[in-house]
Image (cartoon, rainbow, N blue to C red; front, side, top):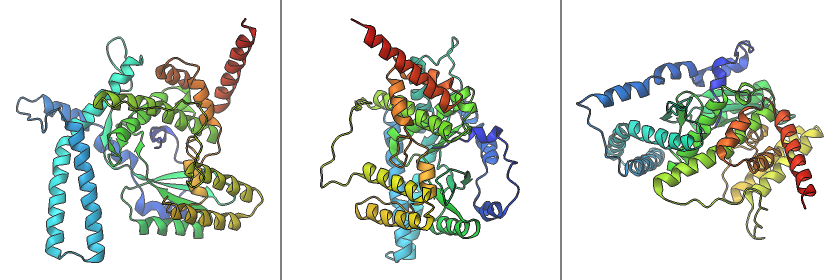
Length: 408
């Protein structure tokens, strides 16, 4: 998940046309072009829906389940077609017939998609209204608006001698692995920079882009996450998204925490399934000695990599990361490439094991001081920097501590 609204107003002219721009140009994704082509989609649908001859594509009952089941079926068939193409296990006629079946299912999905988007928007809006975000005239600003399509990929670039998210470039979705690795290798060789092309679950364009490939629960959580970025876009927290790395991490980690809570409440409302949430501040569970602890091992990897880079041992750090990637692979965790750019991107999310930031724990402590997730979102919106947030949390906890000590 990443923030695109800021890009619409932040200057992109600071970068002169460079070798990097030329290298990336064939793969770039156009934000402005996407906005122009998608911004009015919902209004066109709503106008068409209001016409007397409009025939809804499906009954409301079971709509979401049908859509996400259909989406999974399409994904499975598309993967199978790739395997068939590579190993030649089916004749051309059989492969063509399978492709026609996929296209048929894709058309069914397209007919369902507008209704599904409306339902997701409505469910998240209902939760937001309960949290106090609805105006006196019944409006939520900005309105929840989502487009269920594959998000662009993100090319993340970091220096090799330090882990830092120096630049992000949006690339068109669906890039083949060969194209990703070719681009990363070219940047490494020509720019002496660490690069990684990553998939994301959503992006805060307007409407938000949200993937459907991880199921209903993930789609709801991501929709809520991206709406939070849009809400904060009009407030100090969003204005200062790019102020520094800690403030960026504060934005993304707060959106993760609150977006998960809002999205899971919507999921419960839809499915009736109760989600068991662990106590936010409880100690992590002990992992059996014979069980590979991904979070702990990734954190160890990050800390050791940071230490090697601090000593100027760049190539040793890169060899170490590759060795560790193999360890993760041997234990069932596929990571295509583990490098400085990997940690620069995933480290932005303080609840990710690739992060060494204290911000996630600080946000949990702050969440515990307010009654509702709506209060959390509203309070967070006023912080213009990580330093402001940290000072407020420190003062708040000091005051509470003094109050506790003074009580009989």
